[in-house]
Image 1 (cartoon, one colour):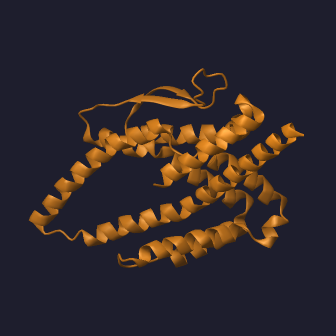
Image 2 (cartoon, helix red, strand yellow; image 1 turned 135 degrees about the vertical axis):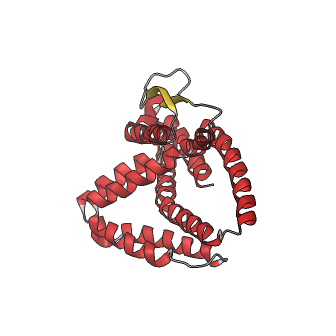
Image 3 (cartoon, one colour; image 1 turned 90 degrees about the vertical axis):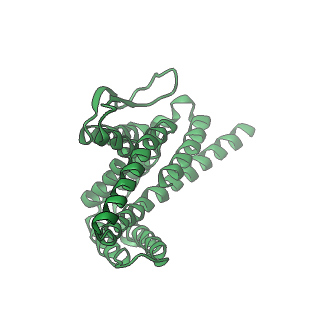
Length: 252
């Protein structure tokens, strides 16, 4: 869901940038956002045993408008590699969020420390209930507040981080091909989980603790994703404002 939202924001941000600056307008953000996007696919390919045949981190003159790609293949008889399709498709989300956190750690260490404290406070829960969504929402707000502080607004490193973060977030979304690739792996994950639940029932295994851990991990991912969603929304608003200024200027 997060990937879909980011993908929609990316699509419209790029559309307004292209309408304002021409076909190369998207390169204002792609110079760093696209390589990090493709790096996410590449790392996941290595982790899940896929063979990489070709990589393009950034290209400027593609006739179909594709800015980058990772071509890979896998053994269709391998359950592990089939599951890997899901994570390879989601790779840009992991590399994008990881890059945002690394940038904050290097450029805004105080905000990073505040973020860690807040995220532990808001995403710590021991049972699964309706309060999970509330804790995730609270953590997202806490993260944004930890970045937009008066001290940071006066810090030159904050503005460097903001430029880099906007570029990364503008290309963190999943393409149609990414989503289709993830769907292949999702079907295999579903099949494996069905078999696991059957085995857990036969051997009377306690799966609640495992499910709780997985859910807590997902909550962390969603909470950190709020940074990318916020910055992607900011990129969309900036691109739309620039587009409106461009249109109004042409009318004069």
